[in-house]
Image (tube, rainbow, N blue to C red):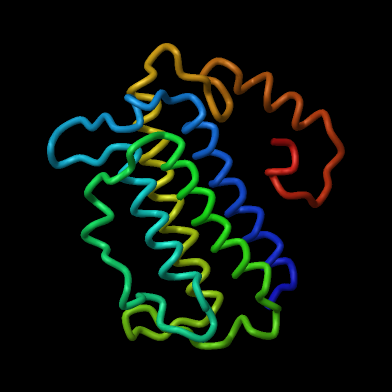
Amino acid sequence: MNPSYLSSVKRQFAYYKSLADKTLAQLTEKELFWHYNEESNSVAILVKHVVGNMHSRWTNFLTEEGEKPWRNRDDEFINSYASKQEMLAAWEKGWGCLFEAIHSIHEEKLDTIVYIRNEGHTVTEAINRQLCHYSYHIGQLVFLGKMVKNSDWKSLSISKSDSKKYNAEKFNTQKGIRHFTEDL
């Protein structure tokens, strides 16, 4: 296994958290609970689901089944947050659980088998599964933020009209091995 894997994946999780954090910071309490229709999720519901998943998957990650018996996944899709502050506290606690677990993993454990709903995954596969799952929902969260804020949205990436300028700055630097999140 490439020794840079764990370092890279930690940065990726931090990157997706930062996208969500920047979105959550732009939204009012009312906007967090808005949903397009009865079948769609609000930002708050997406947060609740991701947090529930994080606690289940990352608590005792190397030693227990990833789908904990105490998790009530269906309840994650019913809003129970009373405020933005409560939602943000849960959000930080979920990420804390993830980062505590992932920082305790050492390279020699990457081929260890862990289970999610009785399906065996190497630690690497389980990490990749969760990274993809969270980026999927954080993409939804950002999209909802853009919809709600409309023209008041503050872009989290290269603005529509700034690609040439951004690329010029990038190609004006020395080639080197670095993680794309270092400049963010």
